Length: 266
Image 1 (cartoon, rainbow, N blue to C red):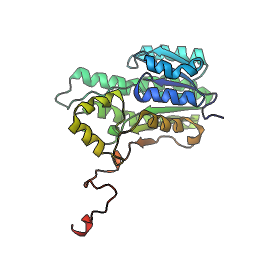
Image 2 (cartoon, rainbow, N blue to C red):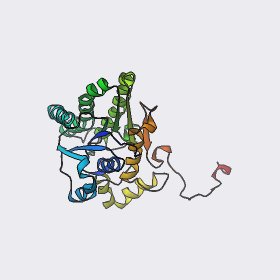
Image 3 (cartoon, helix red, strand yellow):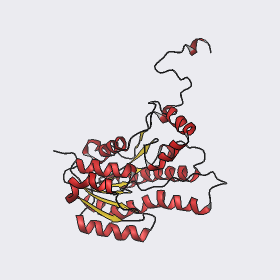
Image 4 (cartoon, rainbow, N blue to C red):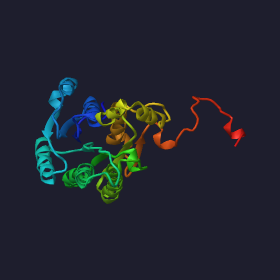
C-alpha cells in the first residue's frame, strides 16, 4: 500500500520548483492532487504527470487574493469531497534591504508568502475540523529561522510562516489536525538559479552547506511526504530543516574530512 492512498492533497505553487516536486511525489504515493498556481503547468511538467492525469486537477490561483482563495477552495472541496493534506508552497523571494525594498515589494511579498498561506489554511480548516483529521505543511525557509542580508521582506515573511505554523498546531491539535513546516536551505529552483550567473556568490552559497551542495526539489518533496503521511502522526508544530547542514554553522577550514589540528594551536 502506498503512503497516501485514498488521500486528497492541495498543493499551492505546484507548477514549478519545490511545489512541482511535491505534486509528483504525492501522486507517486497514491494521492489525488489538486494543483494551484498563478502560472500554468509547463509542457515538461505535463509530460512528467501524464501517467497520473486521472488523479490530478489544476486551478489557476493567486493566493494573495483572499476572495479567489475562498472560491477556489469551495470548488476543490465540491470536486473532491475533502482536502486531507494542504501544502502551502506558493512563494516569491525578492532581494532588498530595509532601505532598498519598495513598499510595493514589501507588501507583495507579505501578501503572497504569509497572507496567502494564512488564507489557504483558513479555507480548509473548517472542513478538516468537521472531519477531525488533516495535515497542513507550510513551506517556510531556513531564512525564517536565521536571517540573511538583502532579503528583508522574504526573511520576515517566512518567519511569519514559522509562527503561523506553530499557532495553527496549538489551536487545532485537539481537532486531529497536524500543522508543520519545512525550512529548506538553498534548493535548485528557478529562484536560486539566478545566482549561478554570479560564480562568487554561488560558490559562497555552496560552501555554507555542510554537504557542499544545494538541495534538489525532490529531497524537499521527500520530507513533505513524511509530514503528510501517517508516519508523522505524532508530529505537529514542528519546523523541519532540510538544508544540507546550512544551519549547523559555518565551516572555517576548507579541509574535507581532515583533522587540521587547529585545536592544538588556539
